[in-house]
Image (cartoon, rainbow, N blue to C red; front, side):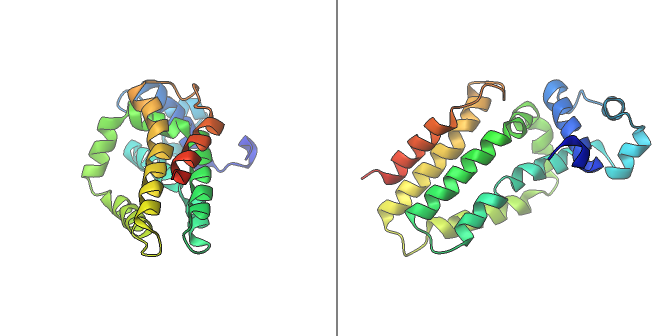
Length: 189
């Protein structure tokens, strides 16, 4: 989507994402964001009542990363093939949205506060969905183990790159290599 076709709300979130990653949520101001956008603070308040609402909307973008890949799992019975397609789609989305992961690394305290103020419902829903997927009785215990292990590799590796190794979002993980490793874990015998 080019800049001209994006809605104002999305453009604000894109600018806030850059600002919150660069300066941190606590040090960034709405005045600064408004100036960056060429807006008044009142125009920002029209779209977002507070800076915390902007952070929440960015956090919800992160939740949305899985929406497309989850559709792969909803399209039929759970098999190693469909799970492999799901993980490939997840890796692509994580790769495309690395800056959101960086936002979470840089702003952990603000996001922890956000969660403490009642945002756990979305997480519980994802946990329930994962629990249902990984406990499918049609899958053998070995398949379930390989699926959970491959899932961990697909999700933890990019996060480790950003959170533990402190790699900037621009230092991309070679996704073809990551997919190959995930496939090997999933197909291990």
